Amino acid sequence: MNQNNRGTGAPGHVYLVGAGPGDPGLITVRGKQVLQKADVVLYDHLANPELLAFAPGKAERIDVGKERGHPKLSQHEIENILLERASRGLTVVRLKGGDPFVFGRGGEEGMTLQNAGIPFTVIPGVTSVTAAPAYAGIPVSHRDTNSRIVIMTGHDDPDSLDSLALDSLTLPNQTLVILMGVEYFRKLARKLLSHKMPPETPVMMIRWGTTASQETREGTLGTMEEILSRQPIRPPALVVVGKVAGNEYRLNWQDNLPLFRKRILLTRETGTQDSLSEALTSEGAEVIHCPAIEIGLPESYSEIDRALESLHEYGWILFLSPNGVRYFMRRLSDTGKDIRTLSSNRIFAMGPATHRALSEFGINPDGEPLESHGNGVLEFFRSQPVQNEPVLLIRGDRGDRLIPDGLREMGRVVTTVRCYVNRVPTLPDYLRDRITMHLEEKSLDLLVFYSPSAFENLMSLFPERADDIRRIPSLAIGPTTQAALRKDGVLTVLVPKEPTEKAVEKMILDYFHESDC
Ligand code: SAH
Image: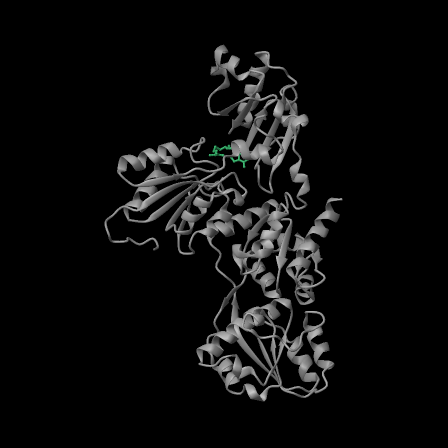
């Protein structure tokens, strides 16, 4: 159900959900499950927006912590939205960075719901208190040295700490984790030093921990102030103070992840279900999904229906994309036919993905190009013994003329059927904002395009950022896409050896390996 009133009069349900510290993989299984059934999601700026893709497309997404452009909603306004949506019978997810009750005002929101008699569930999250240090290689406790952990927020004035409080903060065997206060930390550090905490106590400051934007500053209680004035750090950041923050205890596990701190934008229409994205994430990358293509039905079936009636006239049926296969087969079935109708045709698959799509329908293609691009297709047909059999070309509405023109030059009769249309999608606001931010901050390391239209569409989605897009290294799935990117002025274009998932992954790993050397 969407934003409408369910009409039952019964209140809905609110889930106070921890979004985890930034890495979208660190949401809990329960958290993901409730997102999948949300009617409304209220999220703040520490919750990774990638998680919003788990919510149904129609769910209302409310950015309550917008930092850019719009002022933040007040706590009171947020709680009012929770009450109002829930009282309409909706399922509301309140997605909060880290854990909802670790300095997240989740307690206040829960109390408001409780007082209003709205049923709610709390789903704790992985807090940045432990996760940001863990990703930066710091175990927050250690049996040998740090047997206590103190979590502090930088809201209170360090000058208000009395000597009893300072005694408890300067104990040698503990880890201090300080949230929300770069400025606060400077003051606190001075206070701790004046209270005889050893200046050599290790300190690490971590910004945007667990994400591709992770930044750290390392020093000691004595040196950190100077380090921060030379290399300032902006929020959100936390500070770890204690022996565990020192080199001696450092776990450099992220060095084993070749794509750590790389942010890669995938433009395929597969969204978060993308298997490449899983592989890249396992290698340590942060992946953003921006489906730059929306595939839809053609306005009319007349072209495809005409072809389906006269299939026996064609020697070859050429499938140029997996979508072509799926939309063609769907119409075949909708018109009461099935694969037996194709028994007299020879079937050609443009590349491995198209081959796989045909296999799903029990078809083993009779021909495939040696190299999966337009010229590869033409070479295949040039080498065929019979040169004049008519060809049926199955594709979308945005293919170029290379293949039909080339085949006609060979003397073949070519009929092109546009089985699907390829549109520029409307991006949800959260995704548009997020990508605009990364384009402005120049914090995308690679863009991946599977077709010229994915590139063209991305350019038309962000026209004011076209030059920024051209400057980002891009991977093109094959020569046709490569040519389109080059022509438009993209500076660095990588092309995998073949258009397979494995080859794409390898190309990306090799590229970053070389560029980091
Ligand atoms: N509920 C959150 C904390 C909210 S308070 C949690 O459990 O993590 C907000 C503060 O948390 C920020 O100012 C910053 O100090 C810290 N923080 C949150 N996410 C962080 C991250 N990814 N890296 C570093 N600090 C983070």
